[in-house]
Structure formats: structure tokens, C-alpha cells
Amino acid sequence: MNTPRIAQVHRRTSESDIRVEINLDGSGTANIQTGLPFFDHMLTAFCTHGAFDLEVIAQGDTHIDAHHTVEDTAIVLGQAIAQALGDKAGIRRFGQRYLPMDEALVRAVIDLSGRSYSVITGEPENMQVQVIGGHYPTVINHHFFETLAQHSQATLHLTVLAGRDPHHITEAEFKAVARSLREACENDERIQSVPSTKGTL
Image (tube, rainbow, N blue to C red; front, side, top):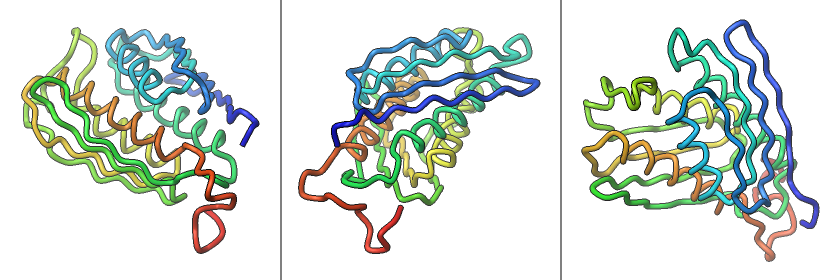
């Protein structure tokens, strides 16, 4: 595939206004502006380790909390990934990554199957109550990745195998998903058609 796989998606609701542009064949260039500094940091890590060029411009009701902005960004990012993949001819389809960050260890396994499904397990109980930087509740990680899988039409298994620090766990999750997605999106020179016995994904 020589044509860059690029998509732009814009979604506006009464709670948020999100615009995403992604180039799956980029080099990790990021322009992330969500009004949530830690979330910006995670999305920057996502595009760096996925080697995607990613622009996310989001305005949301962050004066209430982070939830709507984070969830709606996952919706739009997932839709952009699905659009950029097109018919998925020639892709590897499957990707997996173990990713450590200090005491944290996360495994992400993805299938660009066209079937939305997610299994997210292993986060310690303190992830339910931790707020990073005073604005990012880590309880939303599960919902972000669940929503991303749904709207990118992917199957995602994300497992926290070890970890104590919610910052490290969250960052390892974002990086592991990015790395597994990068592998799944890569072109396989031995496969010219859609990698499915059904002929479609």
C-alpha cells in the first residue's frame, strides 16, 4: 500500500467538540490539545509508540470533570482509525505487546476483526479512586479503551499483569495498546487481500 492511510473525524455534542486527524503511516508526530494535561501526555505517548501522526483538538466540559472529553475522544479516535484502515487489505490484522514501565507490566492483544469487543482486567483497586494531576481519574482508563475498541471495530484484550503506581499502569496501558495496534496495522507483503477466510473484515 503506497497511499497514506489518513482519516479526519469531527464530532460535536452539547458536552464536547472533538476533531481528530490520524495518519497510520506516520512517524509519531503529535498535536494534542484536550484541556487535560495528563490525557494529552497519554495521547502523545500513544502516537509516539504507535508511530502514528495524530492531531486531537478537543473542547469539553472539563469544568465538570474529564469524563465526557476522554470518552468522546475515544469515540472519535476509534472512528478515525477504522476509516483510515479502509478495507484492511494486506494488513497483519493481529498485534500483541507486553510493555513494562518500572513496576508495571501490561499486555495488549488486538484483532482488527471488524467485531467490537474488549476484555480489560487486572487493574488494582486503587485505580478506582486515583486522580492524576487533580484532573484525570484513572477509573476512566477502562472506559477509554472499551470505547476505543468499540469504535475502531476491534477486539482488544488488555491485561495489567503487575503494577502499583496508577501513573505507570496508565502509561503502560496506552503504550501497549499503541504498540499492538501498530503491529496489527502494518502491511504484510505476503498478504495482498483482506486477511480473513470470509473475505471481509
